[in-house]
Structures are given as structure tokens and as C-alpha cells.
Length: 138
Image (cartoon, helix red, strand yellow):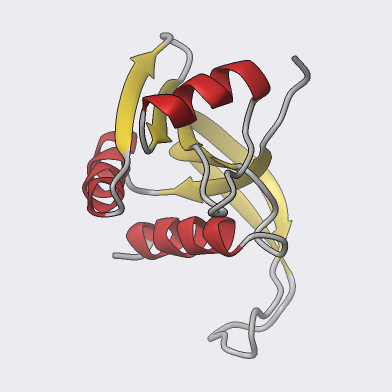
């Protein structure tokens, strides 16, 4: 099977444990179950609604069902971040001037949100993306 899923990367000052706990609670409210794995390299929290969805995912990869829902996951690891970032204003609301900045962090949590489709193409993917972003900011 080829790689499937759409990746959205985030850096945060929160630990994976804090983010994972928030996402577990939110996913349970959406009717999703989860599985946690720790490879020693990264931690993965994988979400699925029921055994049928999980089985379909294991055979076909990330996808959406006829109701537009699907599996999703978080992959997290602590990394060093030494980079230059270009800041851009999003949705017309920013309290900074757009320009390049230097980032230097010894330890920061890098989390990849894996969704079954692009947020522009799927209401479900957009909902999970927005939920995850809100958890990062609270």
C-alpha cells in the first residue's frame, strides 16, 4: 500500500502528553477510540470510530467513509528547532509585522496531524484540524 493521508505539521511549547490528553478527550466526545504507540523515536496517537473503520484503514490507508469521516492521527516528538521562519498574517488578524525571524529552541514538541484528506476538500478534515489548533492554543 502506498502512503496515504495529508500531513499538517505544528511546533508547540506544550508536551505531547498534554496535547494527547486533550485530543483523547475531544475524540471520545466525537465518538472515536484511540490507540497509543511509542516507538522510542516518536509517539503516535491513532484515532478511529469503530473496528470496521480501523479494518478499512489497515487495508486501504487514510480515507473517508460515505459519511465523510475517517481515521486520523497525531505523531509527536521532541526536536531542536534552529531555523528562519517567514511570518505571514493569517485571516487579517495579527499583532506582528510580517518578516523573517530566527527561531532557536533546544527542545520543542513537533506534532504532525495526519488527516484523511486536505482541509480544503473535506469538512471532517477541516473540523479535526480546527479542533487540534484550538487545543494547541488553550
